[in-house]
Amino acid sequence: MSDSPYKDGAKMLKSHIEIKKNPTGNYYFIFKNRHHFVAVSKSFETRIHLDEHLSFFKQHAKAAHVYEGDSNGDFPVFQVISIGANNYRFQFLSDKTLPILQSDLFTNRKQCLKFLNELKEQIEEAHILDL
Image: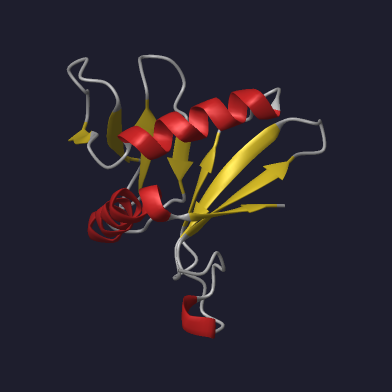
């Protein structure tokens, strides 16, 4: 199996994770699927903290329950949030603190859940691009 994020030499990227550094020197990661939907992590002061949280996320995302509304304290979870009229996003919470990761805004619930399910299925095998 190739380490390339390209599928069978084609130019279409598979789902992958990009690790980046923002202008203030903090690190963050982005999960992207082949349709260009993204979910972005919170910022981490050090690369070590990013690596720890990314590892936790990759290990627990697939089995994490999905809730629309409150999670009943069953962490880690994905929480699907309705924001205004016909706007949805999801976030990954490892506990009751700030989310580790938050998705793009979607114009319908079905598309939001589709991307969330794709992320859950592909995160363990997602190629990491250290940019």
